Length: 166
Image (tube, rainbow, N blue to C red; front, side, top):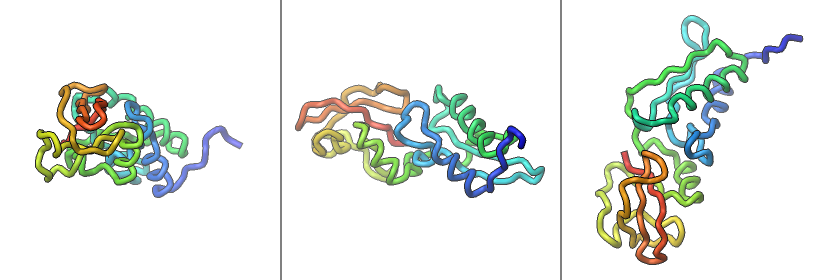
């Protein structure tokens, strides 16, 4: 018996890659965030993963790449490649409904569709994850991570992070 795990098929690798938690928001997975573009067997026989960062300045890019490489190795593909690609560009529209639900359950208001009008007035804001009221407004453009801002709810008076629409 060797110490190297048996290589698993592309579909199973994709499932495990999609289940890797985001390093900054560990309650959502990279698959739920829509960060993983493709998982495939390259013509040279090496497993390859392509991912698109949520934004270029994301401080977690090296951790994401390391976690993906570790998952490939656990799947029996230690020589697999991780490639960061910029096309197609990531958009908050790629967040799955499960990802939006996980964000809300952890107190982060998920972004609306990119085609929706921007919410800037009380009564038209993102739903408060604490009480559900839409009577919210911007509080600070700077949140706990670079991709978040802070909103305040006029109904329950709580502040909460908001994942910016991109």
